[in-house]
Image 1 (cartoon, helix red, strand yellow):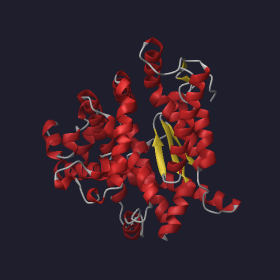
Image 2 (cartoon, rainbow, N blue to C red; image 1 turned 60 degrees about the vertical axis):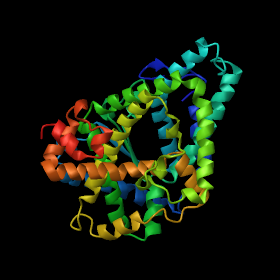
Image 3 (cartoon, rainbow, N blue to C red; image 1 turned 90 degrees about the horizontal axis):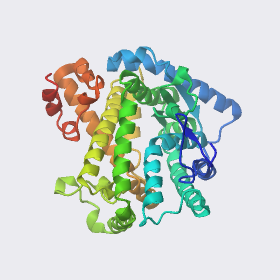
Image 4 (spheres, helix red, strand yellow; image 1 turned 45 degrees about the vertical axis):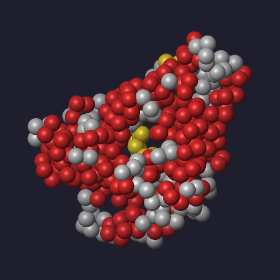
Length: 395
C-alpha cells in the first residue's frame, strides 16, 4: 500500500494522514517472537487450524440455528502470523477511518485555527509517519494477544474486489493459539475447535445480516465526524484522560472501586473512550457498544453451547481459559486499560447475558430476529435488560 495514495473502493484517499505501510512494518518489527516451532510443526498446525475452522461450521449452525452457516463462500479463512495479523488490521483501519480522515483533512485545509500541517507538506508526511509508528506499536502489543478475528471490512478496501470473497476474512493467529494452548496445558485439537467456534460465529453473523458491515461503517463515520467537529478540544481531553489514568493506576483508593459502589465501572474510566463528552457522541458510541456487545456475546454463547460430545475437554478449557490474566504486570495492565481492552471484555459478558436471557424467553429462533434488519438491533439499555428488547419486538 503506497504512502502517496491508496484506494478504498476505487476512490483516492487523502495522503499523508497515517502512514499505514509504516504502521504494518513497525508492528512486524516490534511484535514478540512466537513459539519455537520447526517448519513441519508450523505446517501441521496451519493445516489443523484450517480443518478445525471447517469442522466448527456445522456446530455453529446447530447451535445458532442460522441458515447462513450453510454457505460461507462469500468470505475466506486465513491462518496468519502476528505480522500478517497486524498488516491485515492496518488495511481494515484504512477502510474504517477513511471518512474520518477525509473530514479531518478537509477541516485542516479550511480552518484558520487548525494546528494540523497542510496536506502534502513535509510536516504532514512527518506527522503521518509518527502516527503510523504509534499505531504500529499498539498493533504489535495486540498482535500477541488476539487468537482470532473476523474482519468484515477488508473487501471494501480493494479497488478490484474478489467477488468470491466479498464478505470479508476470518483470521486465525496461529502462534497465539499455540502459545495459549501450551500455557493452559489443554488438548490442542479441542482448544482450536473451541476457538474456531467463536470466530466462525462472527463470520456467520455478517453472512446472516449482510447489511451489518455497511451499517457499522456508517455509525463509525458518524462518530468520527462528531469527533472531528470538536477537534479543537480533542487534544486537551486526551491529555486529561491520560492524567486521569495515571492518577487511577497510582492510587490505592481506586483499586476496589467499581460500578457496584455507585461509580463508573473501573474498566471504562481513564480510557480513550472517556474523550467523548458531547451527547451526540455518547449516543453514537452507545449504539456501537450495543452492537459490539451483541456480536461478542452471541459468539460466546455459541462457543459455550458446545458440550463434551463436540469438545471432550471443554470443561477444563473453560476453567483454565477464564483464569487467564490474573498475573498481568503493571505495564500490561496500563496499556490494556488505556486502550479499553478490559472494557471490551465487559462487552462479552453483557452481550452474552442479553442473548441467554432473550433465548430463555423466546427461544433461539425468536432471538434470531435481531439479524433481520437494522431496526432490530438492541439498544445499550436493552443489552442490560433483554425484556425491553423482547417487548419492543412484540415477541
